[in-house]
Length: 54
Image (cartoon, rainbow, N blue to C red):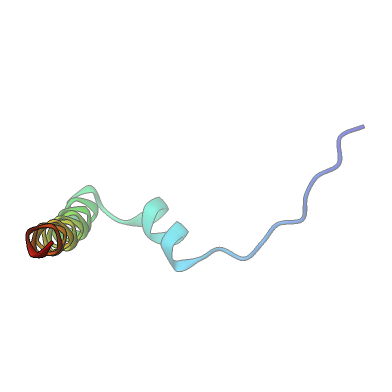
C-alpha cells in the first residue's frame, strides 16, 4: 500500500546535526550568525553608498 523511498547516504551536515554536542552546535551556530550579520551589514552599507551617490 505505501511505497517506501530508498534510503540515501547521510551527509556531513546531517551527521553533525544528529551527533554533535550541544556546546559544539552553539559554537557553530554563533559563528554562522556572525558571518550572516557581517554580510548583511556590508550589503546595507553598499546600498546606502549607492543611494547617496544618486
